[in-house]
Length: 417
Image (cartoon, rainbow, N blue to C red; front, top):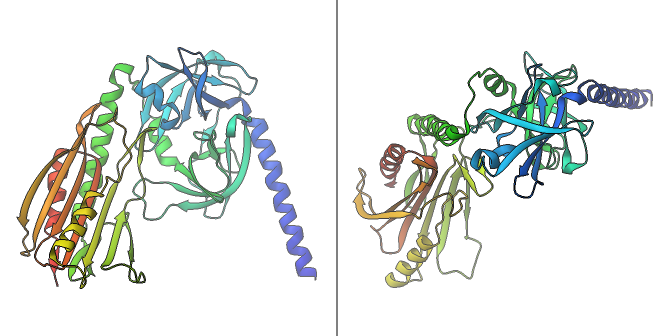
């Protein structure tokens, strides 16, 4: 009984301490917290909101890139404003951004920069430590949400901190701080059920240290350079990794392409009504770079499906394959204003393992970034009449050279058992 009482008392004490710390943090830093508003110049009204925080007396403010992405796309249509804790509003300048890590660096007139700015921490907390997420959820006003620091997300190409706590719409771009009020991350996303993600300290420090100011006329070029640098690193890591193989049907296929690509399998083996067997293996990076509400990029998706049948004749099996291929879609979201239509090239090829395939390689260009492409590849083996492997990959936000290199390595990995 004493032990239960002691544990209960400890829990109450820790909860009270957390509540007091949250109250103190809000009181101390409320003047350095802002609601970030995207203002449509024609209507004069806000079209979206997020959060931001000031990091120095010069007026530099950190937020997410996705909070101000409309301005980066259309600087003549939008303007960026802040609203402080007293309800005062004013204009902000976009100085720089890191689209890969979803960060933006804004600036407020130093004359309007009141109160104590936030301080960047020297190190990340220990796993299990309490951290506090601050932001403006659903336009309800600034709040403090206590949660748990769970370390960097494992097997992630785009580094994120796993935060156990509620990050709601409107809190994007707000700070996450330790018990001293020092910045350890930036709110960026939620997966629901108290699963949140933060951009880690090192990415914030790198952007905060940049002294160059990007002019609106150079926004697109700056974005393209960051996207190209990112895809070169990502595709380079995948191609240089020692690919691991697994069996699918009568073929051998690559499965473990990289530590940051996860794979899942499935089949219709329990479905008694179908006249064919389908066994699949799907792998993807599971993360993306946000460019705007209709365009995400920086993804890799790979799918294999082994199809076989003892019930279908050759013509019926061929029709099954054709239907399967016809419904293959790219793995990333893109709007018609962002990308061109796909242009495709069909071939009959034999890879180094003497596997014969009919292939279709399609590519589309990003309208604002002429050196950036999405690639969609589909192949079907045609060595057997009643069994075939369909292979598919999507690469989004890559160069023409990366498409070529990846396609060649991808096709040569498939072999018969």
